[in-house]
Image 1 (cartoon, rainbow over the protein chains, first blue to last red):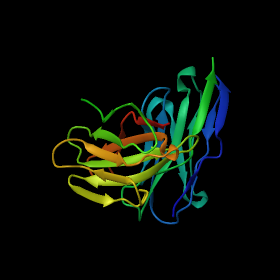
Image 2: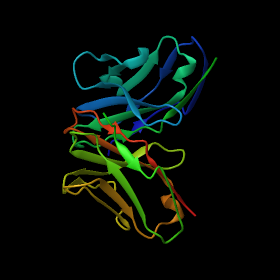
Image 3: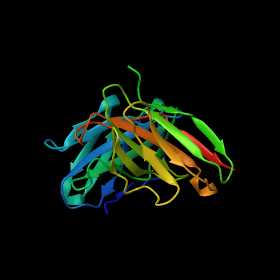
Image 4: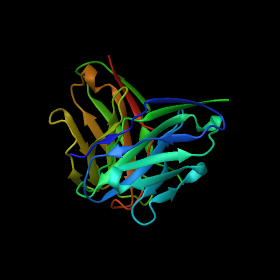
Length: 114
Length: 114
C-alpha cells in the first residue's frame, strides 16, 4: 500500500524566511500529487496539484512544489513566508491503482512569528 | 456557491450510542469521500461513494461503521455503538468525478466519545 511521509511535524519560522516542507511517497507507478493547507479553524483547501507535465508546479499564495520522480518527492516551497501562512500543511497522493483515494501524510504545523 | 457542508460540527456521544454524521456535497458533485483524522495523525481514507453506490470502502472498519449516499439527501456516515477510540475529526470531500478533479473538503465533524 502506498504511504506518504512528511518529515517535519512542526516548523517555526520568522516572517520573510524561506520555507521548504518535505514530502516523500512510496509508490513506483503513476501518481497525482497534492498539497492541502488547513488554516486555524478552517477546512482543508487545495494549495496546488501535479498530474503531469512541468514538474515545477505553481500554486496559490506564492507556493510552489517540485515533483522529483527519482526521489519520490514533492516538496513544498515558498521564498518568503508571512504570518498569515501559519497553518497545517498536508501532502497527499493518489496512486495510479488507488482510484480516487487520497493518501495523506501526517501533516506539518507551520508557525510563522511576526 | 456553497461549499461542502457537514453537520453537526461537533458531536458528543456516550459509549454505546450511535453517531450519524451528514455531508452535503458541493452543487454539481456526485462523488463523496469520507476521511478520518485521529489525534496527531493525518487524514485516513474511509470510503468513496457515488449516488446510491459504494465504490471503495477499503478504509472502513469492518464493524460498526457504515456509509450511504442516497439518491436524495446528504451522505451519511453512521457509527454504531461508539467507543472512545472513535473520537476523531471526520471530514467529507466531494468532487465532480475521477482523480483529475479536485476533492473539496468540508469543515469536518469532531466526534467526542465520553
